[in-house]
Image (cartoon, rainbow, N blue to C red; front, side, top):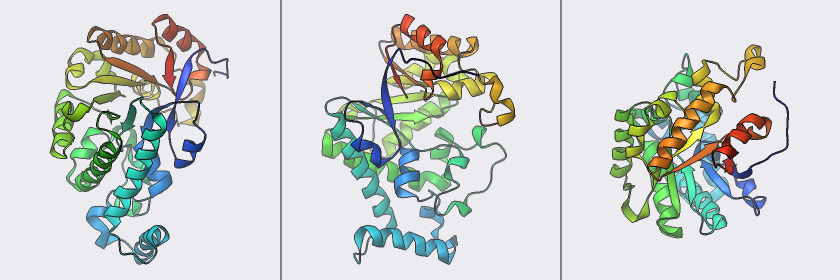
Amino acid sequence: MTTQTELMLATTAVLHNAQQLATLDHEGIGLVSLDDLIATEVGIHPLVFTQQNLLSDVTQQALQQKIADQYGQQSVALAEYYVALLTELLISAARQQGSAPLKVQLAGANAECRYQLLGAELESAEVNPLLGLRGASFYADVHYKVSFALQCEAIKRARAAVGGDTIELVVPFVRTFSEAATMIDLLAEQGLCRGANGLRVHMLCSVPANALLADTFIHYFDGFVADVTQLAQLALGQDFANTKLHYRVDTQNDAVIQLLKMLLAVAGSASKECDIYYDAISQAPRLQRWLMDHEVNTVIC
């Protein structure tokens, strides 16, 4: 069990909700979580856009009330409500960031993160959400292509408003080279072509394969963002949400550090970025010291 220690590294924040924008004046935004913004500010399940006719009357009314609360009597399509709200949040975050790039992590978390959204009854339960339909496989699934297109539209509008090279993308949970190539193609189909108008696309490294095969994955992306918690769970075969195993949680395990070492080395050799993302970095003094020894001075948390 780790305890709170003095933080030796500089940190940037993960943007989870709109309220944070009023409190992050002196701390930069290291990562924007679209999953969290959708959960806290939008509240609409992605399947609603393809299966709205299957929703209960109660859910239909709740969706219409959301639009009425925002637009009054004005007639606005649900998709436009979704895109406009995300666009506004991204523009606000980018302007607060100033000239520094804003990394936006695409929404595509596991099914458990969507259970509280309006329309969640449309989604079938997964036996193991941690290893299920998420990330790249989520965007490519026919049932989620519309919501992916809406995310991309919000990003395009925000980039147009604040300048093309300000907002960058982070793609989560890419299992294979095929999925990496598919993601670049899917983004291009939506008008978000890597390299065009300064668009940079990074990979959120959540799977040990991302580190083990980093020398090939790096060719598909402009950099890495290493998700320490996800790498640790999958490297150690442990669900950190399982309270019976909580005493065994160890993100400073040698296996995790070895994976980070691989990612940093490959990114450095390619002259590309490798950010470290770990929300409990203050509880990991050994990892902090190791990162400092490897010239990492800032952590996203």
